[in-house]
Image: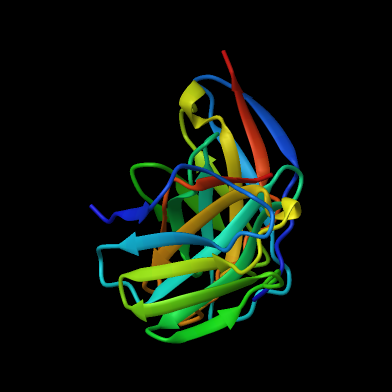
Length: 110
Length: 110
C-alpha cells in the first residue's frame, strides 16, 4: 500500500518560530503537494512539486516555502509562524492518476 | 483545469443509492473527471476517475454525460460510513496541479 507519512499529527508553535512540516512517501511518486484546510474554506493548495528541486506555487503560497531535496520527501516551511497559519496541513503525492494523502498535521500557532 | 460546480450538501437514506452530481461545462477534451472523498478528520481518499466512458469500481460508479459537461458519482448502497465531503475535480492529462473545490457534504441517515 502507498503510504504518505506526515511527521507530526499535532504541533504547537509560538509566533515568530520557524516551523518545518515534513512529508514522506514510499511509492516513488513524481508529484507532491501541500494543502491547508480551514473550516468554510476547503482544501487550498499552498505549493506543489513535480520533481526533485522543482516547485510551483499553488493558490496561497504567501508566508510559506518548500524544499524537495529527495524524491520521497517534501517539506513545508513556515519562515516566521503567525497565528493566521493555525490550520490543518495535508500532504499528498501522486503520479498522474490518484493522489494519496497523509493523515494531516494540526498546527496551532500561539 | 476546468472549474466544477457541486451542491453544497445532500442527504441520503442508508441502503439507498446516493447520486452526487457535478457540473464541469468548460471541460476540455483531454481533461479527466476525478472524485475524492474526505471523511471527518482524515485526509481525502481517491474514489474513481474517468475520461468519457462510464467507470465502476468496488467503491462507486461514475457516469459521464455524452457531452462531458456533467457527471454523477453513484454509491449504490450507501452506508453510514459513506458520510463525508465528496469532491469532483477536473484535471488535465499529465497535469501536475491538483486543486479541490468546496465539494458536497453527503450525510447518510439511518
